[in-house]
Length: 118
Ligand code: SF4
Image 1 (cartoon, rainbow, N blue to C red):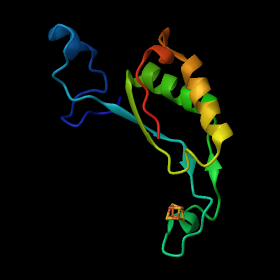
Image 2: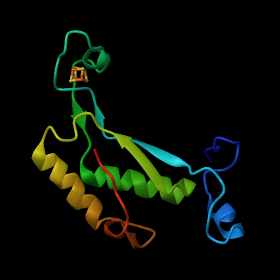
Image 3: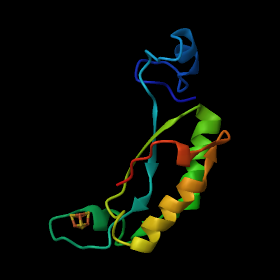
Image 4: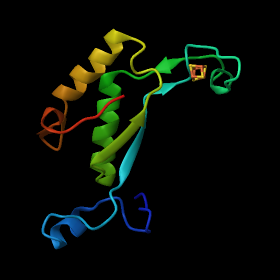
């Protein structure tokens, strides 16, 4: 189990139920890595070299699977992902959005949840 910032567990469910649904515990976020590297080669930047000049991306199904797994195994309900290349490829962007809109976590559609991407 991942330890929370205060040493607590990843799940906030007990804190939420004790407070009548309003959690006083810090929210635990799952960090999602959706791309590695960059397709550009700015002279001052180390990211392309750090990633051996490769640019690899994850598809929507992989991202949704990682969210479901983090929720199943650690009870994580909030996710953070930074993707410098999110809008570089329109087809990929729409594929991720469509896949996440159709995905469910614990029977709850992500389409019914607030998702911020970018
Ligand atoms: S990550 Fe940003 S600064 Fe670095 S190579 Fe890519 S576009 Fe340039």
